[in-house]
Image 1 (cartoon, rainbow, N blue to C red):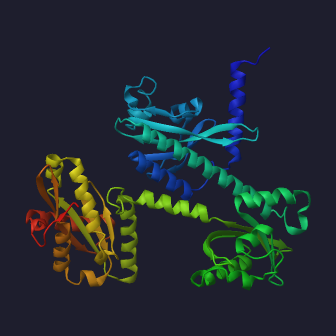
Image 2 (image 1 turned 90 degrees about the horizontal axis):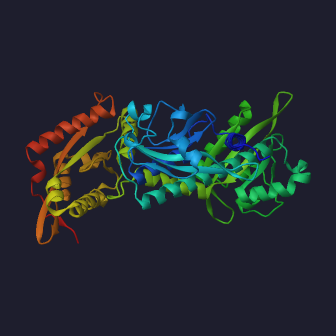
Image 3 (image 1 turned 135 degrees about the horizontal axis):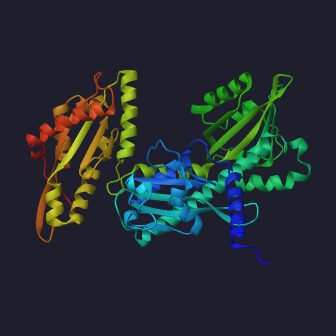
Length: 485
């Protein structure tokens, strides 16, 4: 007799949950690779919120979110992603309130969600089958459509999530094997061949540092990463020379502290091989304790150059306004927080410049959005000129820009700075024989002890910007306007 559908479904769900649990991701701490991925998803899809979710037996757990949230999990039976997991295909609901399946959901009625797009994230289970363990999704509080290029982008992001999960799982397996000592040089035996293959795939190797004589034992892949011939006998002092001078003392201190206190260490660093190649590496170590004393450190060493480059690209994409090439609002907020902390700690000068484009709406309405985009691109170029290279320039709204200036030479003459910025912001665009000019109003605020938060400093600059607009400061003709080539 053929098995019933319910039994088949139960068996499939059991296998799916086994694949999910094997990832060891549920209830884990945030990880920057996944945070960068959802930030990129939100930007590419133009949604305020993007999430990477794992779907457990009775709950949906949020591994990464592009927007800070106090809620890390939801009941599975009210989660839109449950349908994506069940169907194992992309699900796009352009208006949740109008969809009879979801219109009464508390996420719609109480939280106001109106749009959902989710793609399945699959991993290979121990049964050799691919199982949908979660989703990467985007949500919005307004109905919207998702065109085919955006759907394709969401599928690519899901594939990238799968690759990150697989890389993480491979690294954890190798780390577990190495740190438990199962594959040290003296214990390789039957598992040696398999481990060597795993090392090459994951670009990871194992090592052991003897405390007594500071000698090192390396697996073959550690030699490969260093660019050294197999069999050479390195010691700790020689191994440290592969780290750039700027970080070498810090690496040595990290290792010494771990040995002294019997603790684990885990760090990433730039690294220069014996043949001069620059890599990014990760090193982890655990103490080997005998009779209460640390006799050795054992751990793993990994070449993460490609992953690091991907993270840098993802962070850049997530922090950059595509149209102007300037920092976006999220990157601006972080940079201003850091700048205020430095100014507070070191008593160094800090000025915030807020800019509002005058005439931008009229250009958009009269010449069209293409001309408006030209104005924004020219503004981005103006705020990226060499004389502003030590400042952070950002587009923080539709026609709103900002500068974070910590160089005292630039702010020694605030009137001169204001005039120079205003002159740079005068741009002209032409369409169908009609030429229109846009300019910028500028408000400059200095940080002092009365600025307790980012909002305080921004409010002060905003007041000065408003005064400038009222006085039409941004319309002074300090220089001929730039024109679209």
